[in-house]
Length: 384
Image (tube, rainbow, N blue to C red):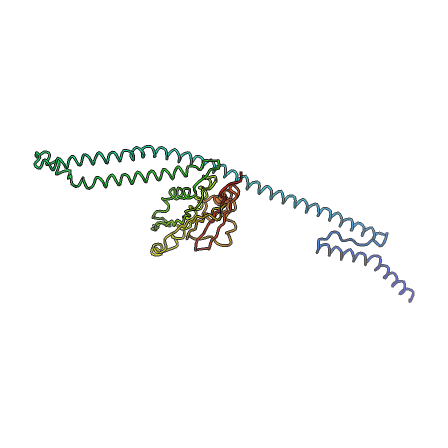
């Protein structure tokens, strides 16, 4: 009886040592591998029997799984990297495509504007050149008529009737006013033509010495219709929009800048257009009285930072840009405008023109609901 118990104990011990413990170790290791995904774990092989073979096979299985896992991770990393490269390439292609289209559009616009300016300027010059002579000739005729009137106090009834109908005294007072208003109108046309010609340099691809103030003024002239008082239709209701005031603080000592003048004008156009959009949006949030008391305003400041750099700051009192999206405004295809009203490439192109094309800086400072300021800094002389 004692012998049986002893044999049973010995068998139990060896069974536990040679079968149960190794299998338990396998089970525990499998659980740890499942939890940690660490396939480098291994179980020491202590026997040469079936349990040892099972342990060896299990260790080999872990090594194979680990190998395939590493290969899969490497493949995923490569695939993710390729996806990022393809995504960036696609974005760059879209950006380049838009730039090419935009460049062609701006070139065509420049040619069109230059052509229109030329066609308008020729007859305007004819009118302006002849106005002086017409004024002189009319003045001479009026003197002659007045002299006739003084010397011939009792003209025949036919002449007296015509004299009464045309009212010579009124003509004498009104004709100079008419010629003055005509001269003012022609000068206005000439000013518009000059602005169009300045703006028409959009198709020029070479560096040139340019007057920044002329570029700003020509751009403002192009946008004059958007700055005037207007009526806005929103939701079937009409809103009266006061004139947007432009405050210029131009430096008298701002030097001539070597730049791609047309492209710099394009930067001005984009920033000013966005400023007007922001002001219009802000005004729609106000009552009529508030709009009258708080008119839209765009402030433009220019100055020479030092002997090598100039700065142009354009600020508006529009809606402003929320802080959490300010870091995205120069990203391609990012826009705050409704679908169909913006491509999301305007500010991206501005940044590229200023920073990459001219080696300058373009910064944005904005406070939501208070307004936005864009600060452009460009070198006076480009490195050739």
